[in-house]
Image 1 (cartoon, helix red, strand yellow):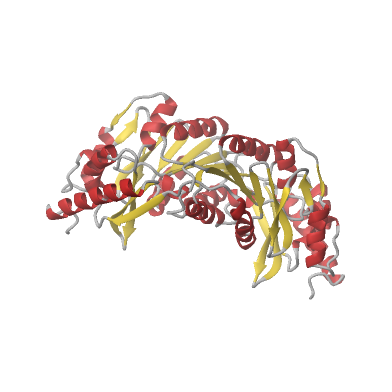
Image 2 (cartoon, rainbow over the protein chains, first blue to last red; image 1 turned 180 degrees about the horizontal axis):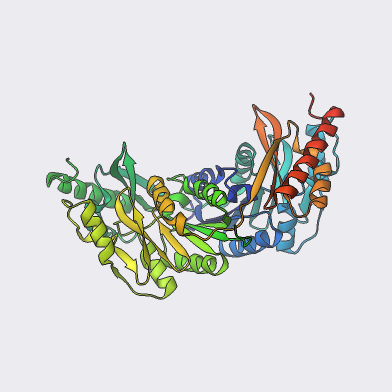
Amino acid sequence: MDAEIVTAGLLVIGDEILSGRTKDKNIGYIAEYLTTIGIDLSEVRVVPDVEEEIVAALNALRRRYTYVFTTGGIGPTHDDITADAVAKAFGVPIDHDPRAVALMQERFPNVDLNEARMRMARIPQGAELVVNPVSAAPGFWIGNVIVMAGVPRIMQAMLDEAAPRLKTGQKMLSATIPAGMREGDIGTPLAEIARAYKGVMIGSYPFLNEGRPDTNLVVRSRDPQALAAAKTAVETMLMTLRANGVGAS
Amino acid sequence: MDAEIVTAGLLVIGDEILSGRTKDKNIGYIAEYLTTIGIDLSEVRVVPDVEEEIVAALNALRRRYTYVFTTGGIGPTHDDITADAVAKAFGVPIDHDPRAVALMQERFPNVDLNEARMRMARIPQGAELVVNPVSAAPGFWIGNVIVMAGVPRIMQAMLDEAAPRLKTGQKMLSATIPAGMREGDIGTPLAEIARAYKGVMIGSYPFLNEGRPDTNLVVRSRDPQALAAAKTAVETMLMTLRANGVGAS
């Protein structure tokens, strides 16, 4: 296991997410997936189907993080402009890729590869294909950017294809401690623990538990011993608060 | 009705969204809400609980869009740093706000306003409060930035509070036309319609309909007549394709 920290940015492309017509299901899936394999998702951006917006966001993210994943905009219609925008961001030509055409012909020998479908075979020069076992038209990988479909089932299959080739870092470990009390009752002693355990991230997540305010405390670290120590400190704090009647009502 | 276009950026703040532990439910809600009242959501960013990241993203967004909405990071614990980050972005001091303290005292007369809870009364100088009918601790509005809670029910109540004071533009109208066929069969004639109806945005959204590839076509415009004309053109195109046997199998 590598001690290096591997980071990622995610660029979600599509007017339909920004209009609210489609509710994104990819951010949460990708976040959890990357965390599990040892990559820290560090930033997400959602941009419309506008070339200069895609290019600017992609260039900002790819310079900053180990990897950038994109979702959306690689279909056969005029509003699918991701591949062209990625080519522009990298300053490389884009054209029909014989490998992509072959994958699509092989999968759908009786389907007319019309002008629209051939759009899905447009791949920036120098990119590797990311195979799409669901519907053939591939994603691609260029530099540190992995371009995937927006349809969740297809995106998930592409992520499975790309994942074994990703460099991963030391995994972030976490433990969730249900508090059974309001955040406001915990905040002061929790801040002391956060100050004492500098290498551990301590998060406090309020939620309504059948209408009643409750809190989950989450400790996170790459070091299992530091994690265990902070977890014990949080549990001890909660026991002390409970002994003083907090959260009992 | 104003012919002006009113835009918004959304900044989602929280490690828990980036780790995948919490699945964001606010982006889709806010996107749909703003579209309905005549504000175009133009960009979304998700950033961690890191002050300089929040400040940088907020400054980028607030210079660019009519409004910026933020969600998350205004609770009583040490990881709730949004109010301080917003004060820093605007270069104004931040302190306990007597109006916020009064709202909290009024609502919970028997609850101890300890150091942690008083954190929720920290409001940047010059901000207006955004009342929180669910759990009292308010959001706030400073310049063109509206700062809201991350818990969906509280965020939704704050958005309802802020909405009547927002300037809104001419509403984007839309019509969805179920195609009943694959995107690849539609792409070529659809691109011609998109070229012919420049003032109308035409989106094509593939989905798996019980495992079978299907497509929704969405036409959008602020001009009802242009919208109707483009919708008719799309419907005519689909009828022609169907007459030629496309999508029948």
